[in-house]
Length: 333
Image (cartoon, rainbow, N blue to C red):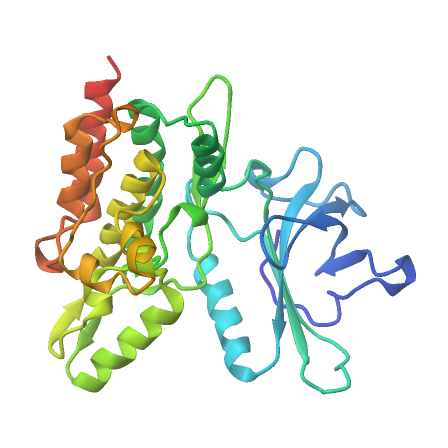
């Protein structure tokens, strides 16, 4: 599907009761709201069966996920455009592809606040997120096997490696179980796909003043989930170089969460109802002690390796991929 902006070609088909949406030359019927806010499951109404599409992303039954974004000011418009631009950069089986998009003008309401809407079309993953699976398993007191943990984690690493090896490198900036789509299969490991590139930015940033440090902290507070946020985004020095290893911290937190069901710093929120900043900047990991949640020490050491408070000694994604490959080989036998 194309990625050109379209104004007049993407609009509600009021003649059909507002149930249809056009995105460029493709018409979709809204089936229902998905489990995410402002995301809908839609079905393509094929008007030209001979239209050429990327076969790797064509849905067998014509269903897709459509994200609808209300745009009320220029700042929101620029954010949507940046999300579209960034999402269009990547092509990897473990990164959610943007299939099509359109930004349209709409009739303003009485308060004149709504001026535009954006529609972003993605493949539909009906099994939900890794977070959904974790919650479901917790309710049953079930856990992923060691090999399943590593297989899911390996896919996240592969997707991030694609982003980190870009020129310039990009950081996802919000790696967490809620941003990982997980599709289950009977005969194969679950397919893990990293999504939501709304916070994704070029990874490397020079901080050369207190003002720049505070600006970065404010941005991170708005865009990066607290229990998965790297120490340098909580307390940024006035002289430092930020790079893609902020994602490595989040990746370490996510590996812990795949194993134990929560971020390693979730306890700080639960115990005090305050910011987990102190626990994070000091890397105070609280390991579960229940017998049924025990994993090999290799995995705990792997988490600790990624959760280095000093970003300069934190491993890079290529190192992580090599290590997870070794662990998969070790625990596959």
